[in-house]
Image 1 (cartoon, rainbow over the protein chains, first blue to last red):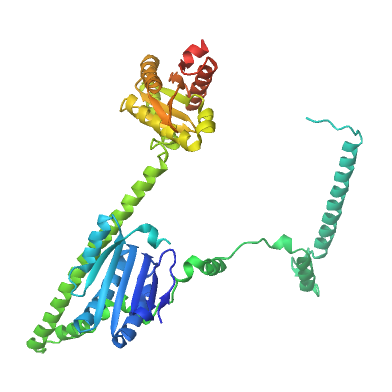
Image 2 (cartoon, helix red, strand yellow):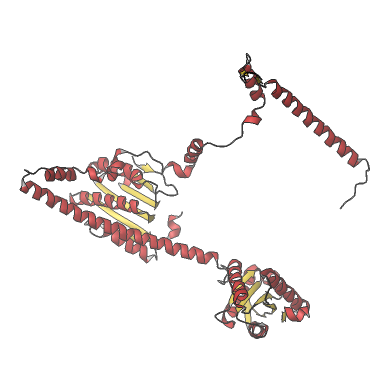
Length: 128
Length: 338
């Protein structure tokens, strides 16, 4: 069970069992990113081996440097699982029309062999 | 000021005040008496304080009755921190550090690095083992280097995004959203700059204040949305008719302020008249009707020693005069003053 509520400076992170989806959305600039992401790593280490498939949906508008490191480490873990034959995929959402955000998504995608889809979203849909 | 009809009223008030003062005095006298009771007696000869029996009890009684003399209320840093953390925003981000989190911070405790350190310290170490470990380390180092470059690139990009956002916010804070013209805050800053420059270099500048004639009627007749259309239409004309160096801003409501640097009264009047005639000669469609607009303006050219407030007051008076004389004209403050 992984369900971290969003705050002003941290994203919402939730695992939805019905669809085997790990969702991460919001902004990420915690005071201590390593402490903040620790439960996610714990969860990945313990639960990922048990799962048959995992979808990772990311819509993060802003990340600080340490969150970026954590994100790259998470992507590494997922990539590793994919290379070991697990059905893992990533969908990276970026704000429609924001070219820089799109390039950033490409930057995250680079060097990974895992299926990595980059999708635009309209701001209104995300802000409810 | 309204006068009281009842002559006895001030007397009553005085009596009341006297009563409350008397009460205060009585309570102060009581406090002083109690304070005197807890005086310590000092021996004149040996200079020792005589500590009577039950003295501390007396002290305790006194301060429990007059706590306000001793205490003032605040929040100690520890409690401030505790309450701060209770705020919903900070709940989630203040997680306890788990061993998992610390793992990232202690890269020097990496087993491979430790092993290599030991191998290097041992002169009899097998070179082949060293070679193999070094190969692993180089691979890791390579990966780490790439990772660091990636993080830096990504972070730079996010920072650029933030910078863009802050520029947009800054711009928005200086812009009137309806017309796209600089807003009052922006023109005030420019006005201050221009005023400082004029004071220092003895240069000239002028200010024009325009007001849309009968704007209230337009709003009432065609609706506020059409009123907004009129303001947008006028903003376009203002932008076209003045020089690049001039700044035209929305001063508020249906007023526009134009700042003309390096311009005396005569030049500014010519520019202002050009703008006014452009407004008069164009029409605007409001709910299917063709409407011709008019604007009135006040002009004031800066004179050494004049403050910004003086300038704004004079230009306002000139505009008022233009309205009074029948609208759709520009009046200079010099004309008005003479």
